[in-house]
Length: 457
Image 1 (tube, rainbow, N blue to C red):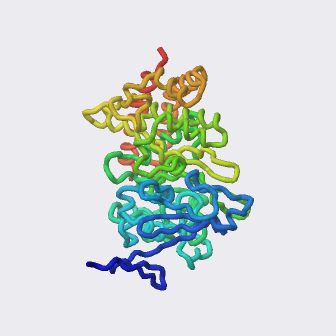
Image 2 (image 1 turned 90 degrees about the vertical axis):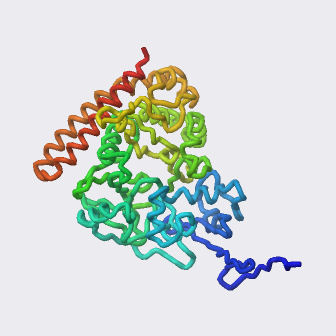
Image 3 (image 1 turned 120 degrees about the horizontal axis):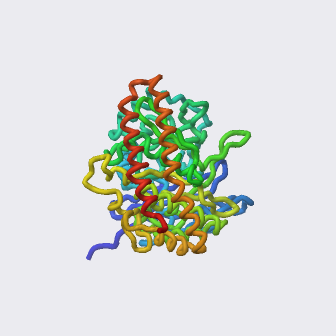
């Protein structure tokens, strides 16, 4: 008869079970200099404990609805894992995660190890550090065009953050780098210094050519359409790079302060794998109900929904909505990651497909393709989100009727800017020509056709 397994605990907190070692790992979570709590993991079960000082602070708030303020541990179960899902959502996804794991020398499936390595700079306000570790004093290092160009050319063999002065993690599937933009120069944050911008190079998969110009153009168009979006830039080093100002940063008299932010998966307590599957008009209504200003949030989310349909964005998933969180509650953040994905199915790219046959990020009241969406569907979607029918119809028509003129004016503006760019950097001729082809496809093959399709007639 075999003896039962023996459990022994050594001095460093490692449990030994019949020769198998399960490390008991922990990270200290802070916002600025304020300790928020302790994240722990043992045998792939995660738990989080708020610090007593945080619970007693007048400025306290819950990191997310799934992690409510309470004394004692919030512990994951075998299937319902709000702690792991929340913190895993801070990490990049897909190939980007594997690259960063390889750079760190840890398995891509070990989310806790990735947080331990890259937690000094993440999405939102949190810094995650092992016990006994602290961030060095804040500082900045120059990031020259030549250095950035070398990193971009090294993709996808290494992540953009490889060789950076600070280990950094940003959520999402695309390659990204957290930087500081100051007077037109790019700098790398060191130690406790917060980044101010996020930089993205061209998509390396080949699926979305000229993705930098695409996102830059669509974000500028969103601002013209009345959406709240951060300032964006395009740069050439000479490879194109997209630069967006972080909305989870606040400039103060003494520097830059981190602001707590979460995405919609974290708000709804979902694992990142559900970012498409759980998206719906009903989910948008639920999101608005969790925000401080519910009515204004409904209108903003409805405007976002309309814009994504008009611009053919099939990547409008739940991780592409974010929220600023503080003692006053949850507020919808400015929009980001807006681009046209269906333009690559247009005649301009010789595709055998058509933009209207592309699949939406998630069905809108049962409708799955862009070409199936009409005026009545979107008005019904607004009603399902809690908006009065007339208000939804008026907002839809206002946005629909103006977007083509705005897109054409913006296209003309970009064409004029490119002419000036070429005077100083003629080597960009082929790059800019390819980008204009993409922007014309967005304007004439997607926006024009969708605006006509959504006419109330």
